[in-house]
Image 1 (cartoon, rainbow, N blue to C red):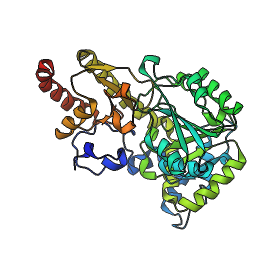
Image 2: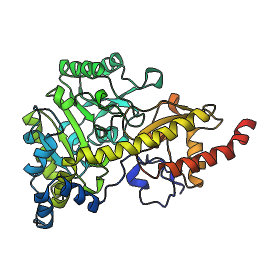
Image 3: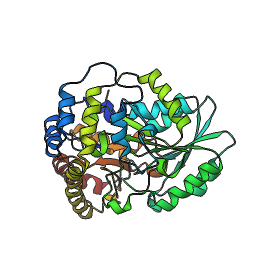
Length: 386
């Protein structure tokens, strides 16, 4: 079966093992080598972590994450978040799903800002919840319409879900809008699940707003090693939350659904976070260099593509202005060994059916762009005839 004919909405986990030459969709940062990580740790003087990695027990790590790891993760937030406000999961995918299962009951209602990472919505459905979507629009610079969120709230609404920085557009929610959403959620006693896996990848760090976990006791912030650091193989994700009762519930749910995760991964995560300046600095340079190439390409081909430069993350949502849908375009690209994610993967509304997501956070992106450009140049005469 052709990948893009599969009715299941695929993402990186589904396609990672498929032999594709140009992964123009890739959204996590340049993968970090363990050898490279050890060099970063040694340069920082973190020899105790290197020794710990070489001499640690293969028994179970502490339920909810070992205390030393949670202390390091807490340094990514303000002083409202300590080690006691962190629950560690075997990756962000597990974290978002277990959190939703733990916090929602069958019949509960959730308001979800879309398009977004599809598992944010599927987790609510798995928990037996009902969903109302509030769609973003490029006409509003992908900013949330707070009035639309307010109108979607029902008597049985328990959950407000969004992701910021935004996947797939790479936009950033303004602090004003985030504060308005927090106030709205608190007024209706809603939990807020904020997928913040691209936080720390802002092109301008001054544009970084507070985590929802810092802004409200109702906030649950999702993080992962995969996106900013390129350390997804450590298999460490987490939820940060001020409310100790929620933390207790999540620890119990984590123990039930995902008790066993790797102590080696925890130690790698500590090394990585402590070397954030160096590792994220390296990854941001890759992103900036790739964005320069993309800006030039989309300026040269503006007759065929509409491009709103992202403010953060390693993803962008591109509008195809040609005579076929983005789904058809993606199928033709895949036949040439180039993978992008068309709008159906994000279950977008019809007004976004011409959009597709690209990724630009890896060193392989320039080669993917060259292949994409060659494909476009060959197709333009055909598109012009149509």
